[in-house]
Amino acid sequence: MNELWFRNFYKMGVLNGEIVKTLRYGNRTIQDNGKPAYHKNEVVLVKFTIPPYNKIPPIFDKDETVVKINSLIVGNFRDFRLESLVKSDLQGFNRRAVRENLQRLYNKEIKNWETFTLIEFEKFNTSQT
View 1 (cartoon, rainbow, N blue to C red):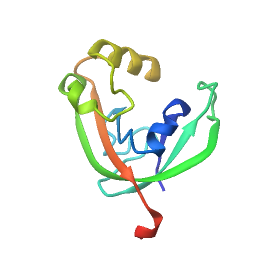
View 2 (view 1 turned 120 degrees about the horizontal axis):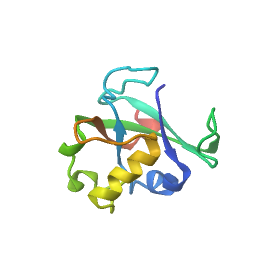
View 3 (view 1 turned 180 degrees about the vertical axis):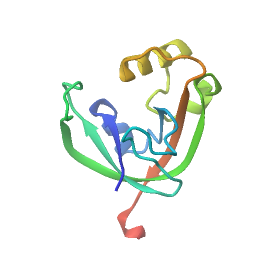
View 4 (view 1 turned 30 degrees about the vertical axis):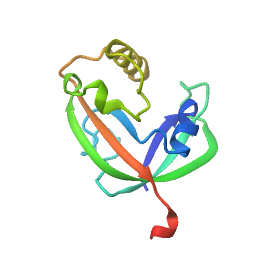
């Protein structure tokens, strides 16, 4: 089962359904450099990393959940509007703060032409299987 990781700060938002989107670097619909490819309707395990965040391998919180991916939108950074980030882990940030947050997360300068994937998901009830 593929995994989707969030920092522990976002745990409650994901668990209670307030966060149902995330913007991830690269085209996450194809496998690249060991990063998984995600697919529409795929069920994935969500794990939450805890500080220190720069640990390799990461340290995970004991809480996990399962979500179903509803959509994957691939585009350039400049194509994603703030409206598309509502109910995401970047909600409430202005454009500059979104870029700065992503630059810190990925430890690189983010250019307008770089590819990102907006992943939209919903909590998955295991009794649905």
